[in-house]
Image 1 (cartoon, rainbow, N blue to C red):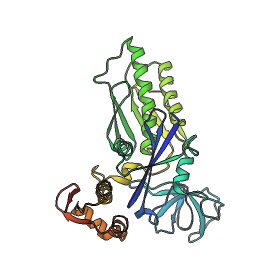
Image 2: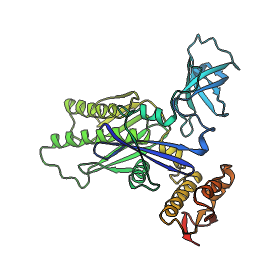
Image 3: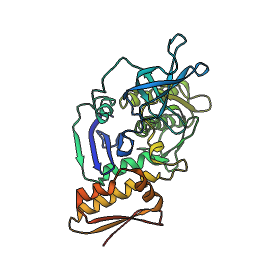
Image 4: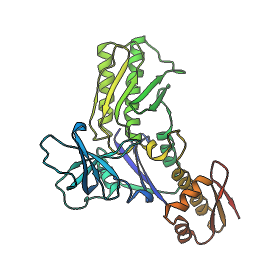
Length: 350
């Protein structure tokens, strides 16, 4: 599943990238928002930070980053550091919901050599030199990839469904074979479905930026040989998509394949959704602005109004990003943004 194409959609407020494999399926996503340029640490950033507190029982300490964000650093017993000391650190794992970003000491003294999107491309095997294609706002492949990455369920290529649930402790993945009619003996069917599910799980882990403990509930019957093939299918597929370290065990007697994947970028759901799976105020605002820009480009002479859900409008007003000014500079003074009490953005001509 090597990366064959990379698409980029540039809109006011955020830019989204999608890496596609040679079958046209999305395998990795990258998001850069105007709001988080100075407020969050990104994977691979090299920063000057201050050691705020040493916590020996936790095996490390807490760093204060230039943005004011806190991060955790692992320290050995003979680290020789003192609280209040300044260090040059590199971000090795971004913040997650209820989890701090993680950093490590680095000898680098300069800013990162590459931009964040270039570092993202270099993190994908064989993707560093794939040409980036700029697409129109609202591009169907971009939108479909983002929808898939936020969906709780995905369909397997041969039929059946993976249900993916991210919890605080682990990522639980259930394999549902309803509607699938594979021929052959039960053991051969189970092996075919389990290896396909393991390969799809690898793609979803890459696409969604999932890490930590991941458990796949395989179907029976499974013997030692088929279990090893299922494990190897996951590892081989994941290594074609990511340089992150991954380990996996053959399914247990209960049919559970356990994997451990190193964290890297924040999970997409953590950045885009609230804990109840509803879009954050920022996500809702930027989605509305994206819809407005798409319509404004398709009707270059029309005057239009975007009605945002009130919580999204309030976020935009409080963000300090002056997004309406950017709209005016791009489209002239023919677009208006106001608040309404509905749950979704609405666009109409005025």
